[in-house]
Length: 238
Image 1 (cartoon, rainbow, N blue to C red):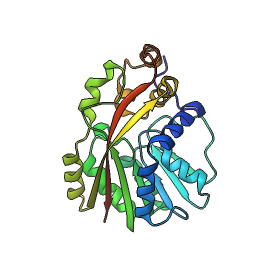
Image 2 (tube, helix red, strand yellow):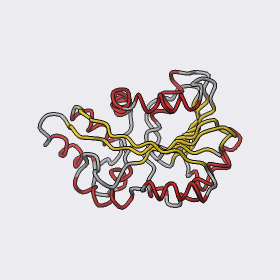
Image 3 (tube, helix red, strand yellow):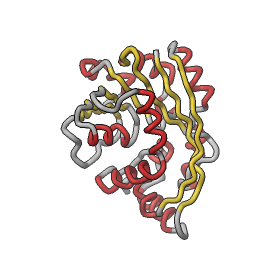
């Protein structure tokens, strides 16, 4: 069975979710940047790179570099996007010529990356003076609606605010944090496609959480998925 499939259907499901529920977050980030055009952006998320792709689509003067070890999406990217498969910790030299970057994004950051101290130190070398690193993190509790089989790994992988700030301090980066709680109501077919995409590390990395497990989990739900989404946004700069 397929564990991750990230095609146009999954991309559109995630994009719809972002527009409905996360618009204020991205406006905040763009306000902090001071502009949304002419940016050099690096996305190192181990997931869908959704916001960065949207910035590339909507602002053709932006240049986006994606580096991820995840499965490459099966749809075409905008012409101003470069895709590199690899680990930012091991393969950063291959994208160094595209930098330095105004904005570096890591969505769904967790201990899945391994060495968070090393990650921040590496990203610092790729960041322009005055640039921003933006991280999105989720708490151990409550997790999002995911199959029960994923819950143990979710809690193991989740990075706490204290851990992220300690790593930022170790890399000599200045930090600003925002916590948010967002009421969510989402159609179960849309949520099914979001889970398929591999955008949540615990879902992607739980070996027995395959396509059938996700489908059965969503089909068994009566009505929409309704929950409060909790997010930590961490912004880092030199």
